[in-house]
Image (cartoon, rainbow, N blue to C red):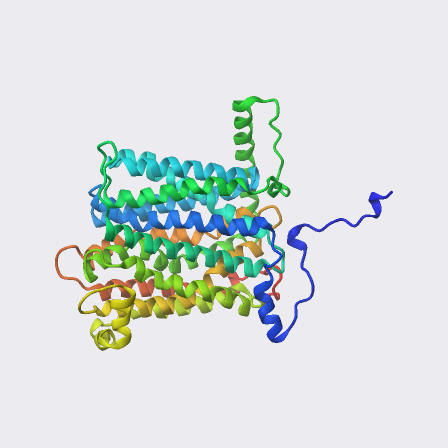
Length: 497
């Protein structure tokens, strides 16, 4: 009788807290909504930072490593990354979402980090193409994929409804802090290029960068340990007691496979699935521009701006804009539907990319100005004349970053907002479909790079960037044209018309 009179506690995601204040006080209150957040949410932010630093350093190095260490051409290196490793990672991410829903966050975290550690070790110690691709690159795609939906699901599970928008803005900001750190690490290791030998093994510059990623990956293990076991409270419990180690593992794998198939069948049978799928596919054209900063820009920098140009520090302009601006934009726009914010952000991104397609001569005076000299000599540490493309790239990244603040965090939130309870990781994984489209598009960038910015011969980089700008325009135009078909109601937002 006593228990019957007790009030049933609400799950974390349903605790909304007091009615928020309005006006200036309410604005600043939006930034303090995470003050009482659970410890696991803050730990999720730490894990996101570590995972993304390791991933981003590897990403920036991958194409250069394939060409310089393994001997692949621009076209082959671009195809291996854009049509092989990167799409494989996205495909495994889609599968990992349902796996996470089936076996829980912590187990998936451990499995992914263990696979990444082994894969990165192989990439450090060998340059035999077939061995490193089969035992290093492919397993790394699987390991990275296992961590992706876990972080999104953890952000949703460990935050309340009132904290949701700000939590996703912060997780995106943390990702960019990791990107910022990776850019400095990338330039520092390439510039310093320390020479050392371990038992007769002398690593190349790119293997040294992989060693940094490996060290960070190892640090992630103790961070995962501090996640409480209670994170599985909304997940299916597995009882493997008495089965023995092998029997328990086999039972978990078998049941997880059944749950994965069942969950994906459920997704495909939902009425809004096709519309959500089209939404994510259009976003892929914006993600292609984001991805080229890792898969195209390093070679573009070495060939147009000079060998070992500080492309990491230059690309960090994006992160310097994103880090302070994402929480502000998130606070100011959280009452607006994610769909409209994605259209606005996509249009701004297209305008930014188009700057790179303009004639470089238009920016010579800007390069010679005080601001141009500060950018080149003080921020980038260059000597002599500043190439106009440094100014153009800075302007492009500033404009693009503003658009990214509007659209990119809201893509992840859109997936989480429409997710049925118990399928957060599955829908979070679907939010990475744009990366699959973007990676497939970037896979052709090796041919575009070889045609317009070859290692030897005449170069026309403005034409390469014009192609990228036109690709970016597909997203906002498509979202507007197909708006009535694509839009679906968002939990906590005003109904769509």
